[in-house]
Length: 144
Image (cartoon, rainbow, N blue to C red):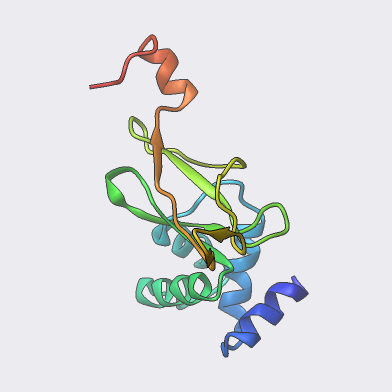
C-alpha cells in the first residue's frame, strides 16, 4: 500500500480516505468493477458518496497508473487494479456474450521496449472473445 501512496503523491494528488478506500477495494477484488459497484461498496464506509466523485477518483487513479480503464460489454466502463504481478501493466479480455472481463498474462508488447526505433511508453489493447462458460453453452459456436 505504501508504494501506491507514493504513486498518488508523486502524481500531485492527495491520499484521501476515499482514494485509499478505493484502492483497498480493488486490492481485495480479482475482477474489474464499474463506478456504480464502487459506489455501492463505498457507501458502506462513507455517508456521502456521490457517483460524480467516484468517477473523478477513479479517473485520477487511472491517470496516475494505479487503475486501468476497461471497456466491457456494451462498452460499459469498468476499472481494475493495474499490475497484479508487481508492474503497472496488464492485458484484459472481454467476453462478447456475457461481458465478463479477465486479465491475462501474454502480451507481445511491454512498456519500455523498443518498437521500430521508438521506446514504448504505454499501449492499450482491447481484446474480445468468448469465455469458456459461454463457449460451452453454445457448443463452440459464436453466440448470436
